[in-house]
Length: 92
Image (tube, rainbow, N blue to C red; front, side):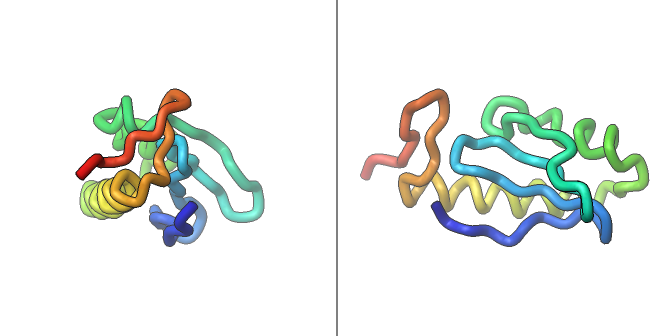
């Protein structure tokens, strides 16, 4: 599994993407405080972020989504992504 830089919301919160297409929200000093399927519910991500961190602004949310989209694409291309027990690698 590729290790990606966490997508930072602010000093306290950051998001990570794992090999099953799940986004996990981490809080410094606590650990994982929430999670969702990025693959199936990408459009809900801004709401997910705002529910935990209402001060997150649109620019930050946009940057996070771009970062996660790029990571997701890389994972699909390298065959690292397994969704629902199936590898979803791009076949060339």
